[in-house]
Image (cartoon, rainbow, N blue to C red; front, side, top):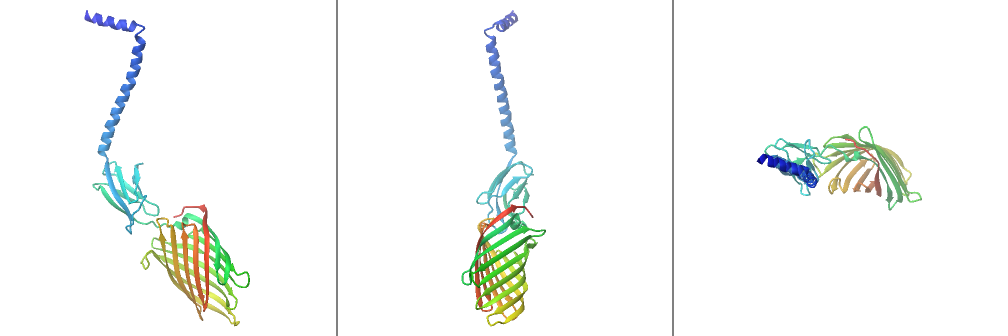
Length: 340
């Protein structure tokens, strides 16, 4: 009897046209809500188990000089999970497990990998890569030059272009007083003909013609090697050694003329101010040339500001006569490349 009452009640609900739309509407509402709740529970469960399995590693990144490295990319190898070292060189990264491998990469430095294992705090030291940033671009430099005493007005043009090994360089400078005094220089060579982590070498071919009324006219042809050493350390950054030889022709006011061979020896250094790339870089060099019957002494300071502004000061003592030159120019790349 009770079963008949239940069945008849169900039949009345099904057959009632006023109740059927409401029942269908409620079923449409309840079913999606159930699916959403079940999905949410599954996601929460998975996230709990996932976070339970992860490991947090921390640390600090330096270079070999114990300088803090900011902006180093710290990545869990084989994943998109990464972070960066902050301004203090610190980092914090969650990895999958103790077998995870962490990669540390930074421009100008060799990439380093470490396995987490039982370590949770790392002190990472990155070594500089054997990478010469000069190769990153082809450079043109245009500017003004002057010897305030002898030839105050001048211009110079310099251009570099990648070569099979290193890069070719060409430079032309002309200064004059719009009368009899002048200076004309041509330089060609190969930059970074030889390169390794501790040493690189340039090779230059120079022609120079200077005329100073009432003093002399001096022409010379020189071949010069410029060798930069980071080790052994004589100066804080690197040491430059200049070696060369040449031929000269000097005419003096007493109408004497001599053709002489000469031998060059010099030393220099360089430094950078600011983080990589250096905001300001300086090169300083002193050279002496023995021309059989007299000495020539040269000094130069070359600076670059943000790799764009070029400035230089040169001083030259030829026999007993003093000349100097100042240059300022703007450097710009005409096509970027990437060479290692």
